[in-house]
Image 1 (cartoon, helix red, strand yellow):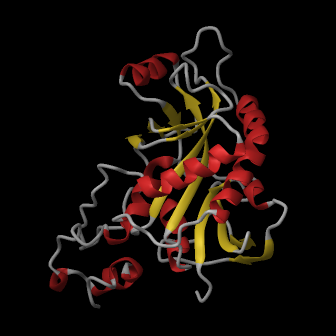
Image 2 (cartoon, rainbow, N blue to C red):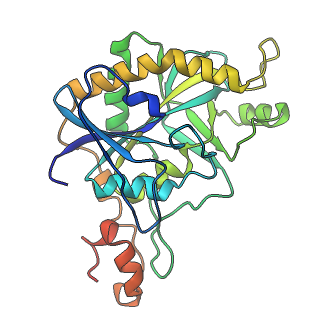
Length: 289
């Protein structure tokens, strides 16, 4: 990819229908892990090239479990993307994180159980460090961008990812609250962990749509409620993306770009050649085929 992409946005297909997005093209990539959820849309915004990927496909036809997270991340990696902004809906597990607010979490609790969680295996083992699963530098940039939109935004909080596609029971929701978790969603895992394996910076703009089902005085979460709040927040998300583009910091000061340097444990001589070929985009700078 000749043109430098400042960052990628993974979210709904409506995010790239914004004024001022120019030179729009679609790329339909293939990866060793299959096809991504949708074509990658590239556009120029405030002089920066931005990539957009609809996580659930055009028309939202993929459930959280059905999303091919590995193909999505690898497709962006192949385009030269090294920073990813995830935009998603979430439920609040805290009174002070109210519907309409935005949360930029700093921790994840993975409670999924049906999804491939890693690029690695088949003869190549990597133990990636995710003690801090989000890139704090990129999260701080996103926080500054959202503040400029005038929206209420919280920096920090723990996001639990459930398998879905159903919403939680009240018993589950209250257990998550007792664990001290802040918000609940269905897509952060394994997306954040795969981004780290791909040595990409990753952050989340989580739009609070509801109080899940724990709040006794508020109506339990429904699809209608989620869609209504997301529609209201689409402009906030678009404005934040624009602010990110305007204030974008070219140089990465974090350690995300070398995440695999201390994670690969397998003797290169023992790795099957087909595995090295499949993962060349990730490990080529560390292991030769």
